[in-house]
Image (cartoon, rainbow, N blue to C red; front, side):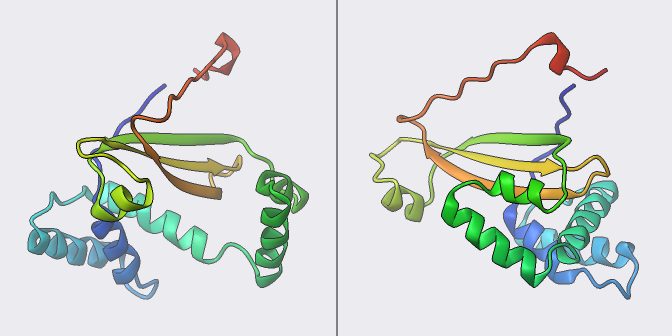
Length: 160
């Protein structure tokens, strides 16, 4: 099953995190993000989408401890954060990957040494446990003329 939602600007996601206050109702965050969207000339996300993003941000905020970050740093040095996450007792249950082809920012053009007119592919990957808690997230940017993405799946991989 594939679900798609309208793309939410990074600036609005940053606003959600900035405006969220656990002492106030999510409706207040929704109102403030709506005003920010209007100010920026962007489409206002639905209340349901804001609510989902607020809950996800709160889950991430209360997530790992300082010890977890130390272990993560050590695992990153070793090159395999998945093993670290599993060693902390977490089990990967599902993941979501979102690919967006866009024209690069000036910074991306410079960092990726792109020629004029070459797009980039943004890949967002979030892995969750059985309870829907995010275990890890990644955002990667690929040069559109230098990468190919291949996915293989089996019938057993599809959930009803």
